[in-house]
Amino acid sequence: MLDLVAYGAFFLTIALTYAVICLGLNVQWGQTGLFNVGVAGFVAVGAYTSAILTTPATADRFGGFDLPIVVGWLGGGLASAFVTFLLGALTLRLRSDYLAIATFGAAVVIQLCMLNLVPLTGGPFGIGFIPRPFGGLAGDALAFGLANFAVLAVLVLVVYIVLERLVRSPWGRVLRAIREDETAARGLGKNPVRYRLEAFAIGGFVMGLGGAAQAHFIGFIAPDNYLPILTFQVWAMLIVGGSGNMRGAILGAVLVWGIWAISGSVVSAVFPADQQARAAALQIVLIGVALCVVLLVRPRGILGEVRVVSRHLLRDARPSVSAKERSDNA
Amino acid sequence: MTPQALMDGLIAGSMIGLGAIGITLTYAILRFANFAHGELLSWGAYLAMTASGVIGFAVPQLTVPVGPFSFGWSLPLAGILAMALTALLALVVDRALFGRLRARGSAVIILVMASFGAALALRNLLEFLYTSQPGYYTRALQISKPIIDGMRATPDQLLVLALAAVAVVAVHLMLTRSAAGRSMRAVAENPHLSAITGVDVRAVIRTVWILGAVLACLAGIMSGLLVQIRPQMGHDLLLPLFAAAILGGIGSVPGAMLAGLIVGLAEAMTVQVIGAEWRAAVSFVILVAVLLLRPQGLFGRVR
Image: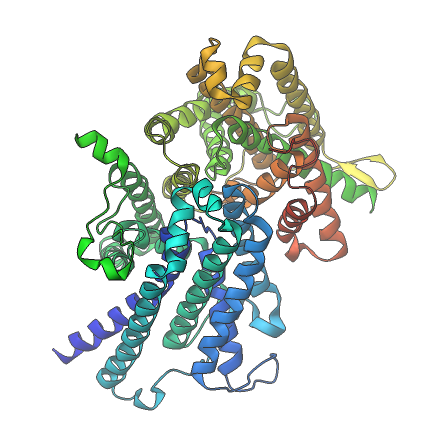
């Protein structure tokens, strides 16, 4: 029974680290409509920055500043925000899909840097001995698991409340106005590029924060953790949960991570060892098809976007019905 | 830059150029960045491998190497079959996915996202079917022959260069001199207006997919012949393809080919000067430079 609770805490903690990353993506895509194909890269920037800042000094690697974990997390978020800011500044004034191509390229280059900048990142072997919150409890699996879960739950809650306030603020309203009708927003004197850039960098900060939290929970990072499949998982979480909805992003993260973990253990239980790589590929095929089907059938996800004009008008909040769907129903 | 690096760059660049033509055409006419284009290269290469194996099994004398090349007639025959099948695959994906999203008037970025999902599914389907073990068209080894001082190439490599040149000229002539090409350019310019003047936009879209898929298949087979066939091959080429399409200017076929050669040469130079481990970063550097200095590309127009 206690083992089950410990496993549950472990599972939920991992799922919540994804929830943070997913919330970051929701600011970029759900609120602003910016397509980021390089999620894995920005998560990696956060994870590596935090690891370099907080690990104890090692002889053959730069860094090892042994700073407090909180400093590492903030540093990871800021580093990721900086990288996303640069990319955004480069591409946001151009066509909308240039951003997608540029983020895709950035993820490739970040992967290369992780592999090749050995003195900084440890190369293919990555960085180990990343301090874990409540490391002193590590002997007691249950207490350790619950303590970590509590930390992540608080982190998700804080990020959720801050972002929720942001998107309901005047700033968030401008973002949605730009997303829905850029010309009209421009007519009101709002500069779309500036608002998009801010949203992109804030999303990047949250992603980096999530990456840092994940690194500290697992205790070890390597380039293999940040392959394009990570980007895809986070996207699946957001699309399934409902883009534009912060609670949807969290729900999607827990749900998709659950499906991923269960189908992974089914694959390893059912298929013989030499066929497992193939079966894992099939697992990804199914999720890829599922993403396309959701885009075709239910673009809103499970919890669609809640269109709230202002938090002072909360009582009017209803699930969004786009103009097109309204005319279809009529 | 040694003559050998020049040769290597030209060969890699011609394959990138062929793939980039497909990207630039779908981009100009369907108006979205197709992340699944790389998978058409991989599928083309694998389909050709399977077809070549079947043909060789049925008629063993077709596997005897032709002239100086490493492969028998089974490969060119299989290549033609694979091109048809790759085009069919592209049409099926368009019918099942992109066409429906277009009909619904989805935003560009939804199409991009759908192509991302399709890419992942197609790539991993290949890995499921063929495993991640690399495949080869032929086990024959080729000795590279000196061409000029300090530059060597195998007959296969020279054939690839010649084929790429022929393909580019053919596509360029088709776009500029034929009725189908005129319709394609009209739709790229303004789909609504061309539909009003009697251009069959749906037929144009089909032509674009077929053309892009055939060229992708050709590039995939070339890459499979000269390097190896892996499920990731198209994905690894995707960033160079995008860099070449944007550097050449969206919609420009000669631009895409020239930019492909530039990317290929830049990669070869990087391998020689900095090191092979940074090769994949070259395309990104080129991409950033183009977006900063000349976002419309070499031959593109400001939109």
